[in-house]
Length: 444
Image (cartoon, rainbow, N blue to C red):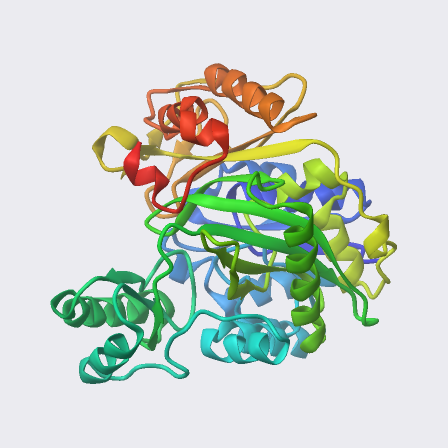
């Protein structure tokens, strides 16, 4: 096992990793930008190193500075969290070349599954249905029009690299396709440094279902069940729950088995997630693989009792999974609400600023992952997510009731947050029935 780990991230995920390390008896090193000097992860770590100015390009994306911090503090491994460099195969390779273990999948895994066109080929080889669409990247608007005519509208344009809804546009006619194609290319270039896009048939009214995977370096892969991530805004997840209220036992088993088969096809190592779209007729299609721990991992932890970050660390240290598929037990129901410093009454406009008043929810069945505290200054430089409320109940109804209570307890002043939006969702009749699709957030 490692004796010291550097966390190449910030905010709540850095705090989350530090906590897991402390419980494993591992010393931690935090890195921070100048503006994050008073952040909670800096206060909790055993050591901390400033790696640059506020812009992420000067700090959390600055590979030379992060490696320098790792070398001067003599760490054995780096945990990237999620976002920033978490799926950067080049960063993982540099870590390995410097004799520092990267806590995540292999560079080969990341490079292969990070290219969505290549990932679709892997899925096809594993026998997983894929959404009809272009087999390669689309290079011109003329080519995009030909493909759309063959697929028939609606279609969706997607960035070939990256995620988070960047470089993604839904099109219902030729005029929209031509303008959206150019916009998607520009957005993909700005977000991922690569303008490549591809086109798929747009599945209307789908559910977004993902399966959590763990694979060790000894060839063992298991899944830890699904998470329903259907409630999104602009393709960015807002609420996740498990188990999905839409899956039956037979469908769950089938989807879990093909997810594991896909991971085994590429000898996948560490934590990862296979994402599917499920249509109204219970047909599911491979969408992508996320080669990292995900924001919504606590939902799975609440159901299984497993600590996924600890599992990541153990796997990176060369240990075998101590679980077989039949050993994984699920209990009850869990829901996660992502709290953003955004104003839902004004098109979710970011609301940075200083927190002067704060009451955090707690009590039975409530978990809160956050890095904020009274007096903390929310920066405009980074993602606006400031907390995740995760609740658990013996069934879905109870998990929702606990969430409703937790949302009432969450008071943050004077910052506008998405808490009022989540309250509306938890009281919505369609959500309470488990009947919703990816366009749900735009309709309430």
